[in-house]
Length: 101
Image (cartoon, rainbow, N blue to C red; front, side, top):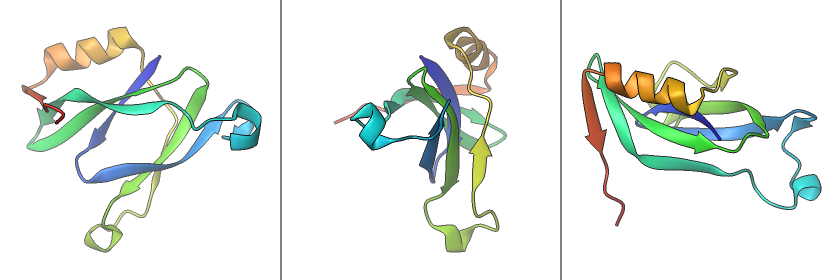
């Protein structure tokens, strides 16, 4: 698995794998992308930890309400390992937990 942190109020859009955009016909399933129940607060901003399957190499992320932001979209090209995610969590100002209902 790979991981990334995403600001609260942001979501993911297009997903890339080694051959290009994620092909639902090729993979016969959507990519595994799951927001985990933990996150961090850095400089007053809440960042949630997401898990993605190894086949994912890049993700497009964008604000949920784009009229509130000057940023249209960003492509995440650097997904992190479990060890890197743990390091970020241990060095965070605050760790938060979201209980899924």
